[in-house]
Image 1 (tube, protein in one colour):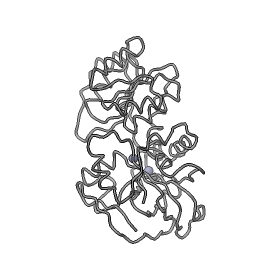
Image 2 (tube, rainbow, N blue to C red; image 1 turned 135 degrees about the vertical axis):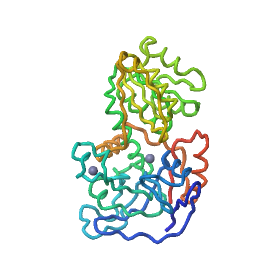
Image 3 (tube, rainbow, N blue to C red; image 1 turned 60 degrees about the horizontal axis):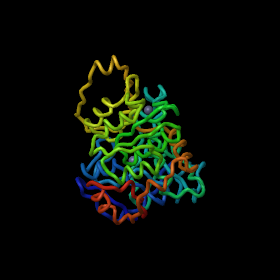
Image 4 (cartoon, rainbow, N blue to C red; image 1 turned 180 degrees about the vertical axis):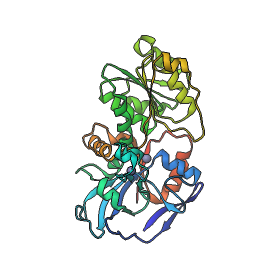
Length: 341
Ligand SMILES: [Zn+2]
Ligand SMILES: [Zn+2]
């Protein structure tokens, strides 16, 4: 089979590899589509992922396809079914799983290998985190269930009311998903980004107002919220200390912050204790997803509540992946690219 193999920093090669054989409990997935993700671009630039990927390795983690074969002992799944696997499954036994926080599991089973013609889905994911793709939902749309599951989980924590104003800082694919969910919840939605094309997409997905971060977007967003008091909720989906600080400065007294973007390891943000305490701020953060959020995300895509097509900028063949990753490493207006074998 054809597969894109990560060898190291900015070194991805298209190679021929044997088709894997499903072991007990596993299913062999013929990939219909994979979607690119900021995490993959990070992995491409760094050449590895501390938790999940030791090169040389096939990578990519947002995928959907058809069951081509099943391993011994698999009874619930049949050849020919259209499915999408999550990129992980929790162990169900550790401290965090026992405390209803499976997203923080100490012993995840991970799945990477979407950028290939075939991939074997590990037994635990087959058991806990594999879903049938509803009829009529294209593979590249079903692939978005994984990032959307992360967003749905982060969005739930905010408990956004229809009377509230939410500002989303940074509208890449993740920020855009927050925009769509906040609009769906009936809130007043404001999006901030430095790229006009992204702001246009945010408007298209339901943002009421957009401000270009190249200008004084923070002051404009404050002015536009609650009579100049600032927004009830700020969602940071950039992942940089500077934008975390902007989020902290922008939210109104008594407001909530969803610090969703993960800044680089070792970075710090100063906290104004007066502001945090006397202005009664609530700091929220969310990591990863759970099987329940994966199911809800696929439903939101299948019902069109989150319009998947708007997130896919274009489709490219697998052999073009190295060029695609190079393109996404620089400044780009592209949202997600669907990769098809
Ligand atoms: Zn992803
Ligand atoms: Zn666990």
